[in-house]
Image (cartoon, rainbow, N blue to C red; front, side):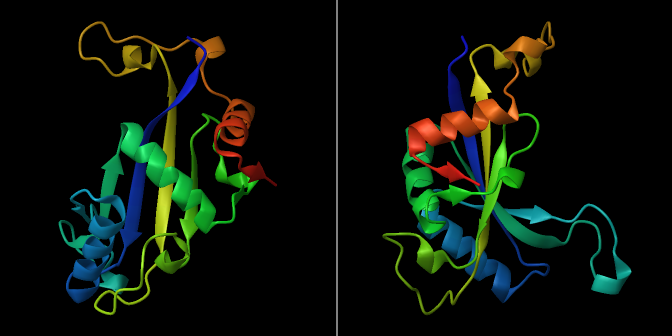
Length: 165
């Protein structure tokens, strides 16, 4: 029950505006992940940035299972198999950014897309975490069963050979 697993990987690109930039970002996420990306919409009004509620300002794709692990190997090599300690939160999840998608192996340059960066967020879980997400008889996860920052760092170091500074 204490074995740590990858729950999901979320790839995210924020463009800040709808239009051509957003279309290019969605095309890039489809190319990298092999899955269909969706648009993310703004929730509140920010007049100085000309953002209103419901305006598409970014895109994301979520991957799970074996496909997520394969992609994560190549995404780690894009950041030279190194992460910062500050990339991890207190619940064992972590995220990191990739400045240019050209750093990812086996993803070639596409003239129609240009150069775009993306953010990768990884959510970890253990068996029994469904207790907090199920609909009926929802419960809490005990403190001893939660994933700590150190547990996540050890898991990433042993499974993916990633160093943490």
